[in-house]
Amino acid sequence: MFGLDSDWSLDLPPRYHTLDDYEGGVVKWCPGCGDFAVLTAVQRVCRDSQLAPEKTVFVSGIGCSSRFPHYMSTYGFHGLHGRALPVACGVKSRRPDLDVWVATGDGDCCSIGAGHWIHAIRYNMNLVVLLFDNSIYGLTKKQTSPTTPMGVPTNTHPEGGILPPLNPLQATLGFTNASFVAQTVDWNPAHLLATIKVAHAHKGLSFVRIIQRCPAFVPLMFEEQKQNPEHVLYLDHPNGVQVDPAVAKLFPNQMSHDPSNMDEAREIASIPDKIPIGILYQNESLVCYEDYTTKGVGLSAASKVEALENELDRFAV
Ligand code: SF4
Image (cartoon, rainbow, N blue to C red):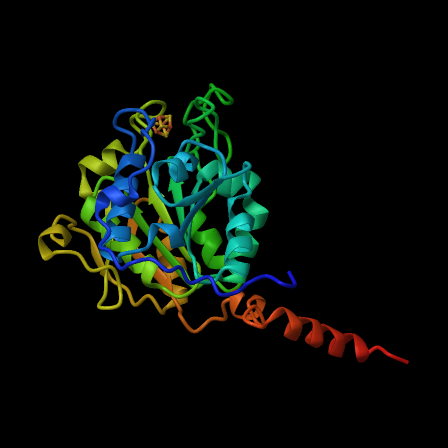
């Protein structure tokens, strides 16, 4: 917009932010919900990175996890179903100085928001996208979601889901310009924290699928994987997620995977019987869309008008 002041620096005294500075409203998730672990990890990343709450924005769509912005004492936008990503891209497009995060669920992102998912990945704006994947519609009380496994009975499919579930990792790795794809689980707080930390440090859109438990409606969905780490494939690499060796040792199945290897990332994403955790793919050399959309936002109003007139003059006959 012409006349928009692009100097957004705030004259605030330097201060140290504690975890309390990020705590928002009273959390209303069900007891035992995996979302709690994600909230704790994100607040820690904010504290460890000393993100200024007034320069941080959480954007969400609709669903249990989309209540996330209410629970952060930062700026937030709890939007429409499936529309978190375009809102976040819009914010980043005009305010590249803000730290922008997206909380979205498997229904919100992979169903109604799927079109935005494809293009947000392609725009590759510098955002952190957390996909809370509990494989069920929880807020609306147990309908089949795009990631519900076949055979799981739900209110929409009492005899069990009939379609093969969508694989968000495979899908994201297939979208043009994907620059960061990782996966973690809510029940390993050290790996969850470390994954969100590297996602936040990445320049470009960081897509993190978090396998998240919903004890209210599908209490057994990930119980076996949680109880038996044989079901998890730990991705190990110097450029990957780093956790304490004592944590890494919990996982008997380990694989050395260089996150720059897209072909191998796609193979890992397709493994049917294990949950891979770690960074599947990372490429920081890809273009970020805001590098273009923010060109000229630092110009004065007069300079913008002059630039516009110069452009229009090109059409003079
Ligand atoms: Fe969490 Fe499931 Fe309750 Fe929603 S319904 S808050 S996902 S446990």
